[in-house]
Structures are given as structure tokens and as C-alpha cells.
Image (tube, rainbow, N blue to C red; front, top):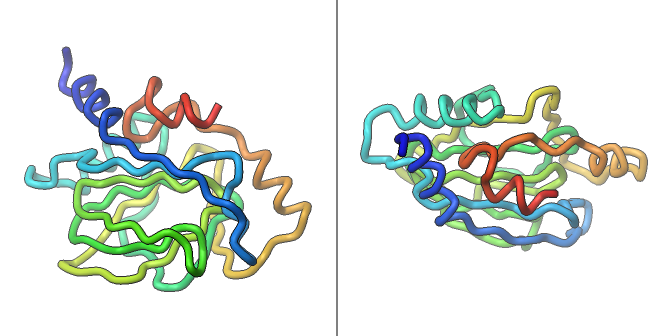
Length: 177
């Protein structure tokens, strides 16, 4: 079995998922779950950022940036988002104000379906992530509600072909169909 296949199988075993309801002005995504992988990449090994970028690229989610997560509530209405934690640790609020708090650290990955609110609550040790998106989806930053037409466009976004962490047979492929 190849190293990539072993990595994909291990990532599948550590994937958590949860659904979110609309939360005030934050639409969330009432059809698609948020996915969180613990230790998707071994953070003790060299070049976590490069390895996340390579993994996302290999699975059809081109990486677009390296940075932190905004410390204000926002969501993306025009793209699904994959984040790979490349250094440090943080607590994020997922789902908008008074949403679900999750702790993430280097090596973890998260996929936020379009509409999912997120905000940095606290961070430590030089927290940084790499962000990736499905081909043809250009992210926006929304800090207020969207119209019904924008909601319909968001819900009509195409599903990615592959899971950004586990590939063509990963949890996203099964849970988002």
C-alpha cells in the first residue's frame, strides 16, 4: 500500500462531522456537514505547510493562501473552504455568534461548506493555516446576511469531486452526496 493511500485511510478514521442550523444572519449550510480531521498530517514531520498544500492539490482543492483565520464572524457564500492547520493551535467558533467552539492544532484539517460561519476565538504558538477551495469557486467574505437569491446560488454550488484530505473515497464524498 502506498504512503498516500495509508495517509488517506488514516485520515478517514479520524474525521468528525457535525451539522449546523442557521444562526441569525449566518446561513451556515443546513444540507452539508462540517468535517474536522484530527492529525490529518503528522505535525512533527518537516514542512507541514508544503505537505498540506500538496495533499489539497493532489485531491483537487488548489491551495490559495497561508495566513490566520479572521477574528470576526464571517462566512463564504461562493465557495466551500478547506483549512489545514500548519502551525500553532487555536479555538474557532464555527456557525456564527454563540456557535460551536472547536479546538484545532497543527496537523488538523477542517472543511467548511459554503455558508458556514467561522471566527478565531483564541490562538497560540504562531497559529497559521493554509486555505484551499474547489476549482472554479472563488471565495468571498460575508459579514452580514444574504438575500434569498444569494442563498439559492450558495446551495447550488457544485460538490467537489474529491475530499481534500482523503481523496476520491473520503468522508466528504460520502457525506456530501
